[in-house]
Length: 340
Ligand code: NAD
Ligand code: TYD
Image (cartoon, rainbow, N blue to C red; front, side, top):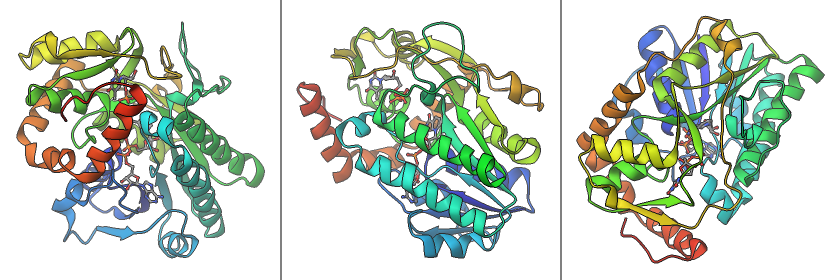
């Protein structure tokens, strides 16, 4: 299969490309990625000379470059996005540009070139906070952060291309991912890398917000399943194997790392912080997928990966972009800097 992946230099995209090249040796992948702060060519460096993989450095808003990539492929898996909720609270501009307008450019280009399948990678955050029970694909979307709102806009736009034009779009909504190559601004890699250096982890509010955790390789396999057997026009929730409160997750990881719980630094809550996400995944399970990774094993493997790949994350954390972001973040949170 000839596949266009957008945002393949990021966390989930790079894990997905690695999975596809190993599970489908005949697959030909073009990775369209602008290389923002979150895009890292190091994530796929072993495929640099692989004839089945090409990276095109381009913005998804650049219609000419998008068209050139689109003309060579049969299917698209669209990951490219601004993804960090805290950054969207500081400034939502790039979130609207990339997540909303960029998705529109991709959909137009893919429709014009007769792409056979377009998988739009969305998130459980589009449902908003789910105090009890679980979110189903037909539920009303009530996003609360600028990030989630921009994802909801693109999610609904993608769906509208199926309804209006019969264009074969499939939308997936996954829960919180974790695993190797995740940028150390997200909760789990921030906690692990800080703890490895005996630095504190800033825990928002009472820490009782509940997230559903999905190992990134299970997500990659779910997208592979959807690409092969998903029904055009359908939406699929993709959930993980562990639902837990942030404070319990943080204590669990610190215990696995033999680190003291005194590394937990309580800070004021994130504005608009969703209390709980939970997904019903019956529809995807009916296609034959289920998450395979045991949560504890996957956490141990993830901790092991960050231990073994210190040069990967210390280069990011000592970089100017990262430090500038955290300076702004500390000002917003009104707290003194923890050293990152
Ligand atoms: P990430 O931030 O690690 O990577 C995003 C990638 O997109 C980067 O490589 C970046 O360079 C690229 N990109 C950003 N703007 C671009 C643009 N204008 N043009 C081209 N490339 C651009 O993201 P991630 O965590 O891997 O998330 C991937 C997708 O999965 C996103 O759409 C996100 O909303 C969705 N998602 C993520 C999670 C999660 O837990 N991380 C959960 C559910 C859904
Ligand atoms: P995050 O990884 O940012 O994912 P999301 O906000 O998309 O769910 O955060 C996961 C949870 O951890 C979320 O409830 C916010 C919380 N959190 C903290 O308490 N402190 C932090 O420094 C970060 C980044 C997140």
